[in-house]
Image (cartoon, rainbow, N blue to C red; front, side):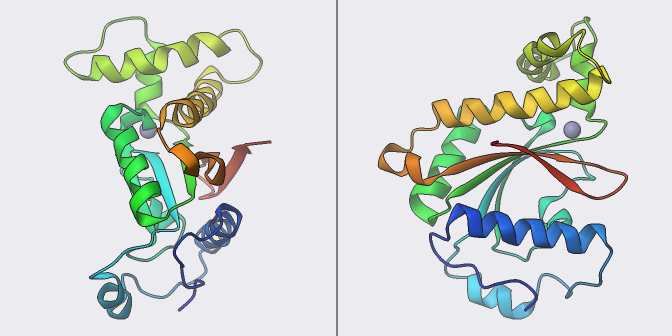
Length: 199
Ligand SMILES: [Zn+2]
């Protein structure tokens, strides 16, 4: 096995380190073990203890198991376009914390996010895309006029705001203080995940 064996209620810092090492392997194109392995599949068939909850974008280029070089059973993944969270997403996060022992949440935005890009437009998006765009738009307005590229700034602001929503709205009871919510930005060109917070 290339990665440390995930344990129930692994500390958020240990989980974060495992994912940072996995992303470094991926970005450097080191050859990793083929995944999923049969052994890991059998080991996790009856139980799961994912080391992290990833709140990521549905974008086809940002698959968390791939970019963090993790195996089946390692990550509990909630994906929507623009990595926004609604009640279903918050419920999924609460489930993983309370029932699977996961203590690390990573909100993962990425370069050239189409959902955030759509929110830069002032027009109304069709159908249910409108609901996503409405959730992202306050992040765009918050960074408008700031130095740097508007899209990149808005993507990062959206990550920060979604992370804050998770911290404030996920109902974790006594477990809340044990859970870390980290903010990350994935670069499609380099394959590297940059860590935006918490600082
Ligand atoms: Zn996206």
